[in-house]
Length: 83
Image 1 (tube, rainbow, N blue to C red):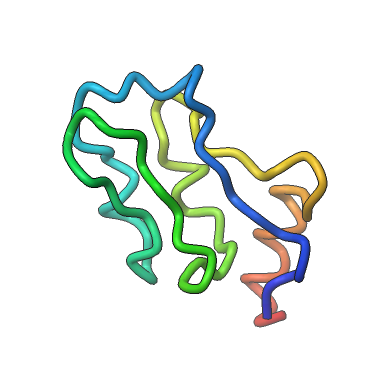
Image 2 (tube, rainbow, N blue to C red):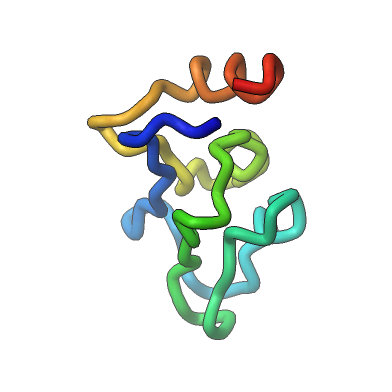
């Protein structure tokens, strides 16, 4: 179960927005999408289960846990334990 305040966001200062987002391929829920290769990826909060796969995979570190939400390590722990 996902924390009500938990949210993954895309940092536009770190995302180059000049290619297809490679992290889309690792999202087990299909929550990460992109309108075209020059747009900022978007995260569907209804689909995202906060597994952290996209955060771990993003080569630019552009996918982050929002400042007021669950920490990345807590997200990974919750996912592993089915919380």
